[in-house]
Length: 229
Ligand SMILES: *Cc1c(COP(=O)(O)O)cnc(C)c1O
Image (cartoon, rainbow, N blue to C red; front, side):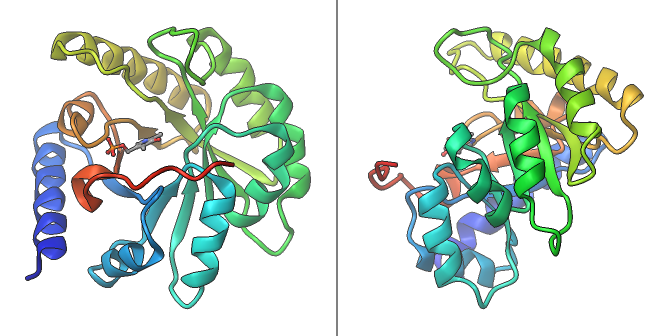
């Protein structure tokens, strides 16, 4: 195996071990932002199908280069209202819906020939003013608005944990997300996805109920310079 294959196998094994210990499945989203299309192709060749991108234009360019592959693209970066049309047309999943005013434009622009856009509500679990994500108290209303749109499919929640040096503080934030997720599931039966955990804390996230982990640098190595958008 080359080094990419070895690294990929090692991450997969760690996810599987954490999922087994937690007693629920966990899926890998490979975060390919700033990475070349060739790196995505390499991972796809090893069997990875779901890729996450932060920037709409960068993602579309990569999708064109990789159009011969059957990949599942997730938008995980903050979404501006003027990008709703492209987001609705070019992604299978949107993980960063965090305000009500995006719901109607996303639904309107989702092309009829595609399945409904799979949506996660991004929650700001650490309540930091600088980060995107809605407040926990806003989830119920946002969920109802998404669930009312036939062209959108509400699948769950996403969070980015603040880089607390102490694992106990991250664990507390993940625990709050887990509680919010379990509650949302009682109200929306299609909800099955809790997206949290990145390169340096995905095992902790899985222990707190994450069903999808978003991993970039641990798979691809350091990021290249982010493009302006
Ligand atoms: C970049 C990014 C990741 C991946 O982070 P790594 O630390 O490289 O694993 C995950 N989620 C979001 C929302 C990101 O922007």
